[in-house]
Image (cartoon, rainbow, N blue to C red; front, side):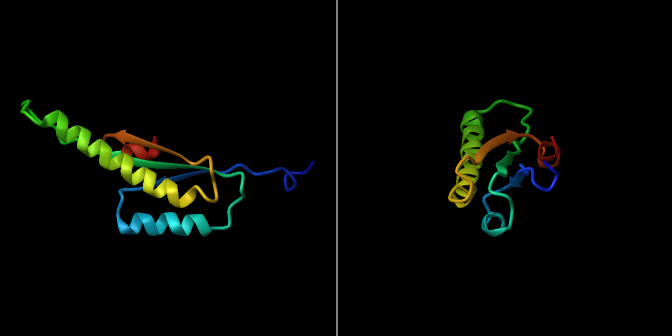
Length: 102
């Protein structure tokens, strides 16, 4: 078996913020000529603003931001799922540049 005849398994990372541009990127990726064995992962990074004090509603704010991240991931994953049924999605907390490179 040569290197050319072996199936290629590409790992694909699609970072999304839920914007129209991110949706367009997901739609473009779904049409891009990649091997069907590719493994896409949709990532949304949520930055929780630091608060020096605790206040009522802080946990609700955090949960709302995480829910927005999950929603953005699922919307992008839904675009990719017809082509890659095993698409996965995850939401990370922190600085987006750091989390995307992790």
